[in-house]
Length: 497
Image (cartoon, rainbow, N blue to C red; front, side, top):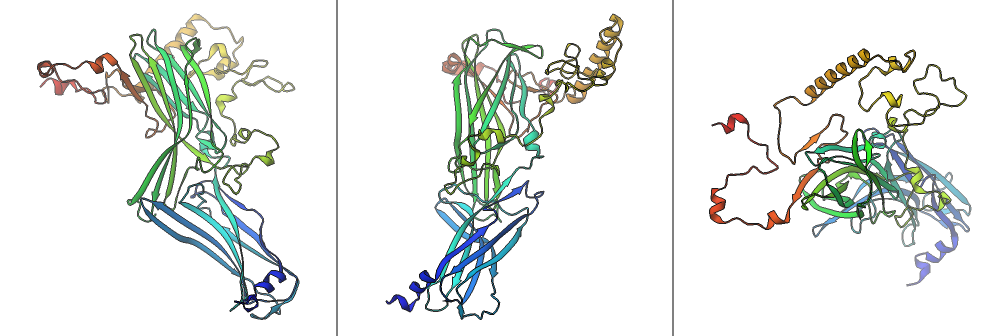
């Protein structure tokens, strides 16, 4: 069929430039949906005509499309659409548009609860596009252009996820006292995760064997987000892993009065959304991330114990480390700067800046921090303070002279401290409530920062000799019932009947 019938040749020769120009190709929502502020989508539709062109209409659309594919089913729908239609002064619809340069500004305010983009999966996504159409009318070829828009939700600099240390602080009875932690819950995609360990052996001859750290991503999909009970699929994948054998020659350090192994490991996160999504929960997409930690313990009798724990993390996209068209973080604009330098988005924690050295030009009079002292973990006045102390340090700081304490005063202070500690423990752990003598029970300590649902560690004992030894049938019938390790022993009243 002749090309002149549809005007394709005329359109190509006349339209020299037709583009959607956005002030920002990536729109950033800061904070959770209930608290985030709105963001402005603003841009200009540009048209350059070298020759007069017959135009019926010029329109622009901002479209949000959702696709879910799992379990052999697929659903595609448009959950959002915004339309613009531009009028030209002195121009009647269906007439010829003179050769000239044209610009039509547009804007739209996206609310704080607007769904964020989800890209990186093969057959499921949430994407946004700008679609501009130069409508030529009947029997003429339209000019259509599209532009990809990304909407991300990031953490605000004041978010608790950036300043809240994820930590498990427990005691495995007669085996180890341990602390597992990460500096914060929020982690930027494409940076690193620091896993910190403090393991104090309570059993002589105990050693650490293999240590495994892995970041596991769980994806839950729903065909229709209006019916959350109709979940269609769950996918789990390991996005990062670190596995090593603990060096047997590493010496212990004195920490809080215990000899403990103190070490850290750094895990590098993928830079591509195809390998790791952000943590999200919107429009039938829910992605969670957990840092799984497994520590094998070598007992003196050669059987192996295993400490298994999980720390929930929130992976988010930083406005500084944005994605390219391949859904991969582009670092070309950083000029060689380490992406991890942008991971700090919140003020430093108090524990990292205690007893800092004062500015040299300040008068140290009236400050509790001792002038000239180095920063430490037990402050102020390292020699007279300890972790968790309830002493009146303000009075001690301005004592004259500071180091003059009589034996009677010291004895009185220690007696009062023991009473206060005993009362505090009684209020936190009431007697005869959920008590257990189970040797494998985890004993939480006061002040432990954790989330109970995801941070409960598990303790396992592996003994090859016991596992391979099978009693005879008559012996098994005569043996008494043993309470499993995951059950609470019976109370005195129930066992006496």
